[in-house]
Structures are given as structure tokens and as C-alpha cells.
Image (cartoon, rainbow, N blue to C red; front, side, top):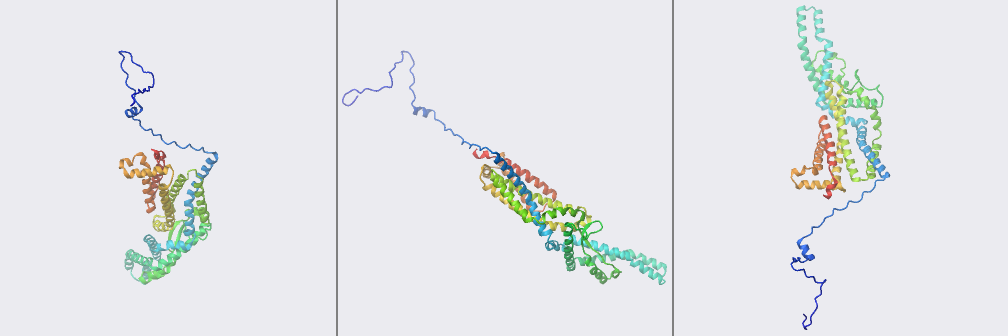
Length: 443
């Protein structure tokens, strides 16, 4: 009712209905606000729609195949290129070679091998001179009794032992002197010149023993040894002929197997370097997923460097395996010193590839890189049991591979251990790569 007494009609939404007598009353209808309060709704989250996959055209497929081929060839050529620079800088250059093997004049195994050989040769010559026998015959000719002559012959064995000890001391003094170092350096310079001519196909100038072994000729020490033995009072020293000493450095029949490889790489280091870099760079640029291609390329270069380090040690062992055990010590020292520079080059390549691989893995874009970084972050904040779960397998396997790589690059290991570590690196690296699932990023 209004203030002036008029009656205001009340609007209705429809005709009023009166329930029949005895019928139960219907509950009042809920308003939208009451319904929302009684039954709150949950927000519905819709996962983001994945972008539609782009169809791979035949041209794109062929470019991907070409990219893979170029990357594989580039990784294979990395150790070949390193070897070519090593051949040019150490094997073909005489002064560089002498600079490497010259310090081996003070190597204990080289000195021992030279001492044993020179002592044996001097004693062989003295035995052939038969100083005691000649002295006995001269005394008999002068009229001494047979009994006295027989007594003199009994002195031959102890005198020979004392003579050998004296000869060994004299030879040891010479081998540890500056004179030996000078002769050793000059002999290696001559031997290297002959080795190069062998690798170039000329076998007529190579100093070899009768069984075809390659030697470093030390006959320049003959006059020094003879004079020193005379001064030491060794009987018959003045009658000694030239005592030719030599250090066996390899099997000539096996070294000739390197002739083809030597000719192949000696003049191509810079060409190989340009080709290798071009193959790797173009291969990565042609790839459809360049981050993935970069990771695989760096991993391939790293594995190639590790495998070649092991191959260098296997090759060094093979080069001296055909020698007599007495010659393997000195020959092993020489081969080890010569191939050490190659292993250093490969280690530098390995360290660079490893650093680039880690940086690329942690800073690259794309779902795999994001999944890897998420695995690292989650593992840093969770317990070990969670860290070794399947979603963290990339981190665990990658850590195993990383430790093995660092050990191989930092230390010289036995061949068997090195081969085992290379296998672990390949398996763990593959597992880390395959278990990095991009789908985890959206989880």
C-alpha cells in the first residue's frame, strides 16, 4: 500500500496455483545464488593444446639424411685430422722428433737396455780373444811346467767374472755421461731420417738388423768404450774391434704397414681441418633440430677423441709386441714419448668438446634441454631416492658418463680399463639422452 492510501498491485510471474487439499507442499525453488553456494563449482583446467605437427616434406627428409651423414663424417675425421697434424709436426719433422726422444738418453729403461747390450758385446769379443788361453800358451812356449799351465787355466772363470763386473761399471759410467746423450741424439737424428725414407718407400737405406728390426745405431761409442776399458785395465781391451751398439725401436715389417697411412695424411692436415669443420657446421645448420644436432655432434667428437686415445695406446703396444722381451723396455719408452704428443692433441679436443657439450646441454632451448634442466633442479632439492627415479635418469647417467670422461682425459690408463670406460661413456650417454623425455616439461 502506498503512502496516499492507494493500493499498488503486486506483479506476479504467472497465475497463482493453489495445491489441492491434502497434497504435500513443494519446496521453494532455489535461486542461482543459493545453488552456487550449496554446490560450488570446480575450475576446469584444460591442458594447452600442442601445436600441430608440421608435415615432413621429402626435401626436408633428404636434408636431414644429408645432415646426419655430414655430422658422422665430420666426427670420424676429427681424430684423422688430429693424427695428420701429429704426423706433420712429429713424425715428418726430424728436429721435432729429436726434441721428443732426445731426453730419453736419461730414461732408465733406455740406459739399462744400452748397458746390457754393450756389456754383452764387449764380453763376447773378449771371450773370443781368449786372453787367458793365449797367455797360457805363451808361458808354455817359454817352458813352464804343464802343472803351472793347468793352474793358470783355473783362473779363467773367476777372472772372467771380475772382468765382466769391471766392464759393466765402465759401460754404465759411459751410458750416464754427456757423451752418451750427444751420441744418442745424433743417432736418433740419423735413424729418423732413415725412418722417413722407409715410410716413403725406400727400404735400402734403413739401418736394420738381420731380422728386420729398426734400430738406433750407437756404434759411435766404440772408441770411447775401448779407451775407457784400456784405462780401467781390462785385459785385451786394446785388441777389441769396434763394438756396435744399437737400441731396437720397432719391427721393420710392422712399421711398413704405416706407409699408406703416412702418405695419406702427411700433406693434408690443413685441408682435413677445413673439410672437418665444414662438414660439422653445415651438418648442424641443415638439421631440423639444431640443438639436438649440436648435442649429438659434440658427443660424437668426444667419443671419437676417447676412442682414438685408446687406439694410440693399442697401436703403441702393437708396434713393439713383435720384439724380444729384452728390447721392449727401451722401445716402449721411445714409442710412448713419440705418441704422447698425439694423445695430448686428442685430450685438448676432448676437453673442448666436453665443455661445449655441458654448456649446450644447460643453456640450449627446446623441450629436451628444458626437461634436462628441470631434472637437475628437482634433483638438487629432493632426496636421493627421488633423484634416481626414472625421471632423473638423465642426470644420473650423465653424471656417470661425465666422471668416466674426466678420468680418461686426465690420466693415462691401461688399455683394458680405457676400453671399459669408453663403453660406459657410450652406454651412459645414450641412456641419458634417450631418457630425457620432453613431455615432462608440461607435467
